[in-house]
Image (cartoon, rainbow over all chains, first blue to last red; front, side, top):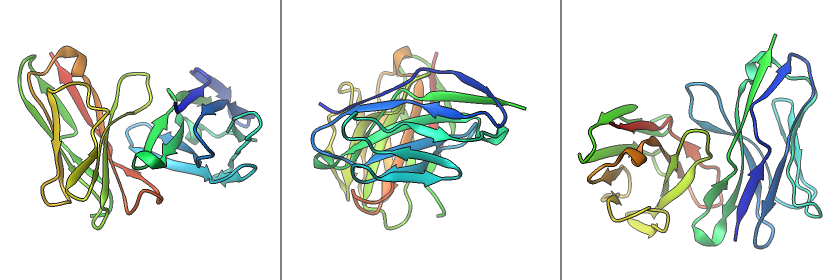
Length: 113
Length: 113
C-alpha cells in the first residue's frame, strides 16, 4: 500500500539554523511528492512538489529532492526564520484512486529568535 | 470565491446529535475531497467527489458518516449520532482535475462533548 512516514516533532531551532525534516514513502510506482505547510490559524498550503525521480522542488528557500533509491523526500532550508514556524506535512497522491492524498503525521517546527 | 470556504469554523455538539459541515469549493473545481485531521496527526482521507458523484468513499469510518454534493459544487458532510471520537478538524479540498494542485479550506473544528 501507499504510506508516508515523517520524523516526529516538535523541532525547535534558533533563527538562521539549518533545517531538515525527514520524509520517506512507500508507493506503487513513482508518484509525485508534496510538502504542505500549515501556518498557525491557516489552512494547508502546498509548499513545494516534485513530479519524478531526481526532481528538486523548491519554494520560499525550502528544497526537497525526490530520491527513488532511498524512497525519500526530505525537506531542507539553509536558514530558517521565525515566520517558518508551522506544521509541515509530506504527502503523496494516489492517482488511481482519484488523486487522494496520503499524508505523513506532520512535523511541528518552532523557530526562536 | 477566492478559495475553499468551510463553515462553520467551529462546532461544538453533544454526543448523539446530528451535525452538518459545509464546503464551498473553488468555482469550476470538479474534484472535491473531505479529510479528517485528529490532533497531532496528518489529514486522513474520507471521501472524494468527481462532479456530483462520490467516486471513492472508502475513507468514511462507518455508516454514521455521509456526504453529498448534489449540484457538483457545494458539499455537505453529515455525521449522525456523533461520538466523542468524532472530535477532529474536518478539511475540505478542491482541485480542477486530479492532476492539478489541491487547495484546502481552513477546516471545521468539531468538538463532541
